[in-house]
Amino acid sequence: MPATPQEPDTAQPLAVLVADDSAVARAKLRKLLEGAGFMVDVANDGEQALDLLSRKSYAVLITDLEMPLLDGFQVIAHVQGSLETEDLPIIAITGHEELSARVNDCQGLYGIFKKPWNDRELLKRVAAVAQLRGATNGG
Image (cartoon, rainbow, N blue to C red; front, side):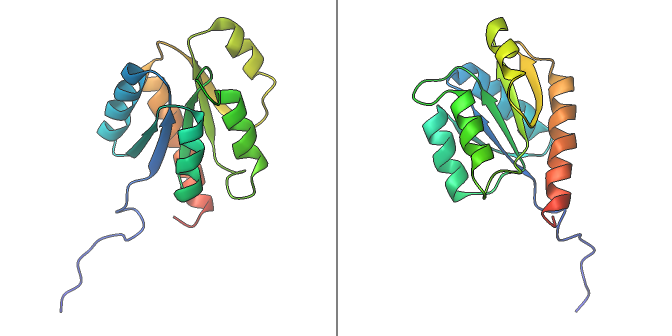
């Protein structure tokens, strides 16, 4: 039986979780990331994001800072405070200048992008940190 020349680890796309209460932002990010070959799950708010994180492993989390129920700062604190997710790379997005200043107090973020973000720059950042996460998880 001839072997098929496929790399088993690189055949599966890396998963990205997008948490944003804006349907437009979620749709734009999904289209951008899926177009680059990522598998994308979306959450409408912070609680839904944490629920998804408890059930599945992701290479990168992209979170809006201003959301209902749990905001991005609370999601970041929860992710970084949990043994299961403490090494998950997080990229923050926001439409508010004052929130981006507050994000500087958060440790361990891999970037903050203001809305509207630059697609190319955001994609380059996601790809770079996803590869880091994939390499450290044996993927």
